[in-house]
Length: 416
Image (tube, rainbow, N blue to C red):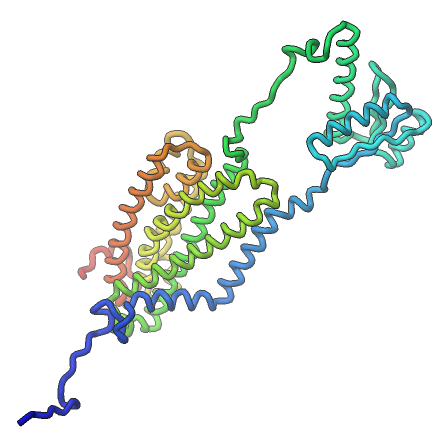
């Protein structure tokens, strides 16, 4: 005889969501749900979307507007009174076009010196070349253009040397042998990246990390305290392990920060050829490959601490005070990174978080051996693991504390 058991009277044991690493449906881990929620909420935030769009627009404008507003190729008109002066102007134009094939230098023939002076004063021409070999004059209304003055002076000097060489029975090369000064720009690296572009790229790397760490860090802290203030966190903590809640928040904001930075970098790389610096793309690409792991590890090293800063506060108004140590830390590191040099700069490139600012700068400048960024990454990875552990401890101890704001020292002294 079989016994039929009424299922309504049979106690069933269902796992608490999150205790076995799955959600209530048994298919998803709780932290993935939290992560997706963080991302979804932010992608629906109009201020976040429009802020990103505005950043991209300003970036593109900063890159390409100087190209279009730079005035285009040089164009000059010079009054002359004879064919000798016209020949000098024609030679000067050839010199200009050797550097910019769209540049122009046109000779306007006038009757005499008086007519040339009148044309200059009336603004019909930019300058007037009067006289002859050995007695040339450049007439202008005010100071002439430096480029125009330089190219005409160089042309007159070259023609005079050529005539002297011919009179001496020598070639121009023989006459000027040993008198030429060859300029060598040491600021330009082997990959074709000028020195000022190296500095600019290093500065952009630093400011991107600084802004991402500060902006998304405060967002993490505010998100934590809003849930805490509304008591939603008490419901979440009853259903989801606190560490999985923290993991979802941190990873969600890390993905958002990385995605925003990746979008900015992608747009910058697409717009860069329009600036004429596409020759530097190989060097920039190599620097980016090193920058990305430093960015991710540096951000993760701070993200859990930002979450702890939010957990220490009981109200949104308190976040500013609980996050002040982190904010000041970022400001000090950022300023030190930009102003360091020599041995201090080398040391900072191995110090966690500071290395995210300094090491990419050194890589861009070609000032590192392969082992240096690798060692810096290992050090920041170890520090990242430690900061995550510390941040998680503080987060757990302070999350359900609602009676006033906790200090960092008080949170460290609390028992689990």
